[in-house]
Amino acid sequence: MKLNVGGIDRILRILVGLALVAWAIFGGSVWAWIGIVPLATGAIGFCPFYPLIGLNTCPMKDNK
Image (tube, rainbow, N blue to C red; front, side):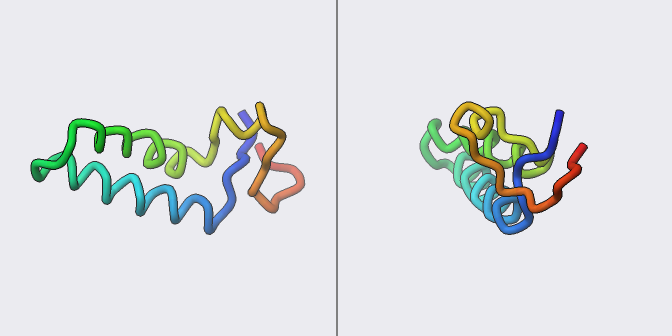
């Protein structure tokens, strides 16, 4: 699995994911649990949707 999520993208995904999960925990909509997805993809550094659309925000040439 090659990394395809770059630095700023990862930070934004983690922040948005944490905010949505916190909202869900503190009484928000059940749909806020979708925040687990950007949180996980930001933490792992891989987004399974990016290869489908040909996108790669990771600046590394030889990413493993």
